[in-house]
Length: 298
Image (cartoon, rainbow, N blue to C red):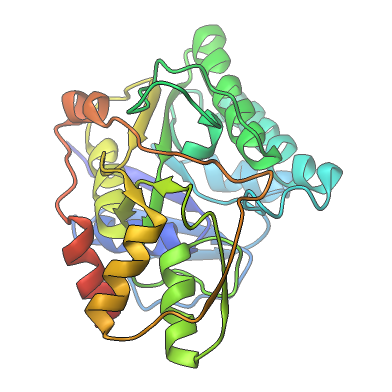
């Protein structure tokens, strides 16, 4: 069997980890990103905007798999400009889907969705059968794209996987954004800056190491299309207050933080069941949170 031709949109935190994982398998990879090439990995780099129809038409033409990792917003930022958020994410994805259906209908698209599509739930752990109730435009955008993928599968036999990723962390995560609690804490401790942390007492999260996320997406590339939504998560629920205590104990330092209540876009409790993806592709997370934090904070 020939190695699949894989295209990746977005070379951010997840994109870098996924690319490193795929390179280990000697896959034929090309990347489309708005920035100049920043990696020495053996990939074909196209510096362009994924919203450009002509660019995307050429990029998609010879692919077997498209991994869509690009997103212009995070949950807390998506309230800034609704129109821009829709244009950057939903409209651009609809254009990509139209091009795939016209020019490469057998392509398999793997989409990076998010646990934010679930919103605040009652039944835990959250399975793929839980009714999505997003409370942020970010989560709503992700869910909307998932629904477009599902309908395109029904109507046009488009192959897809929607990956509902919980809370990824690890090397390479940006610290100058509103997302990525562990990276923000790490940077704050190194720079002695006072941090703002929301929901210390009432909030829980399901943290998953970026290596495990990359491995899951890599395995999806090597299997037959799953044509459904799957949770990519650790399956373990952690209170933010307990996380902070663990990091303080590990580092022998007090975290200098201003603790505030949850914002309107913040989910209060989150832990995702990952049994479906385990059963479909045989993946399971390897790094538990304690060892992952030790590795990350070294």
